[in-house]
Length: 131
Image 1 (cartoon, rainbow, N blue to C red):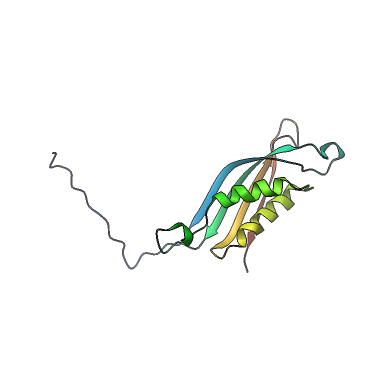
Image 2 (cartoon, rainbow, N blue to C red):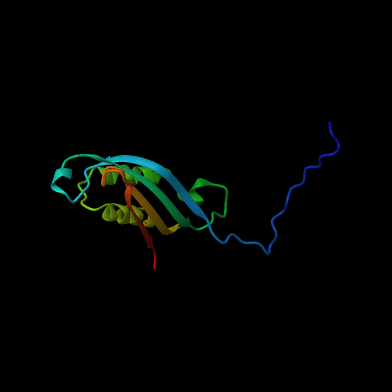
């Protein structure tokens, strides 16, 4: 055993507080019937979704004290089964679905639509929050 190393544990100070807590899920890929152009109707297109949720910091080390990020994927897959014209609408609705949970204070949703503009990556960013 090497006596040069000492393990210490930092005890949280009562003067410290959590100022931000986010739940993140990135690179969620879905195929969606989305788009405003006639050539897009009924043609599933890939969407790449990134979500950041502002959540209340959990007070205990248990999942029920926070937001289970697997819900984000489930909500995105659910929305992808509907015909939606605008990715802005898709993003807003995804954020609103997350806001239905008490622990979620705000949702930032970025959606990229790789096939929208040839040679470019088109997308949108929406932030929705509780008042």
